[in-house]
Image 1: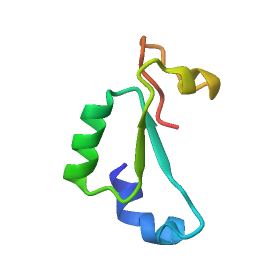
Image 2: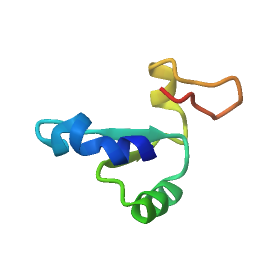
Image 3: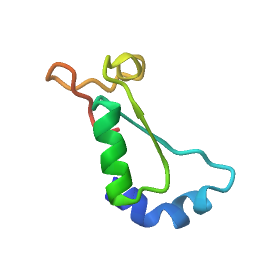
Image 4: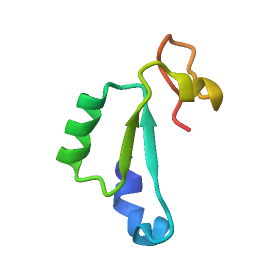
Length: 69
């Protein structure tokens, strides 16, 4: 995520015509705190039930964990 943050302007044209949403199985409170502290310029979404992870085949072998996709 740090690499995306640091290269956001170049990779995503500073968000022009792009909406980047990082989805994590972590709780929203943890994501909000981390995103604020690290000054991420994009959105985070919490998928604690791993519904989105299942749809996209992003589940890791450990329960309630997702792969880095």
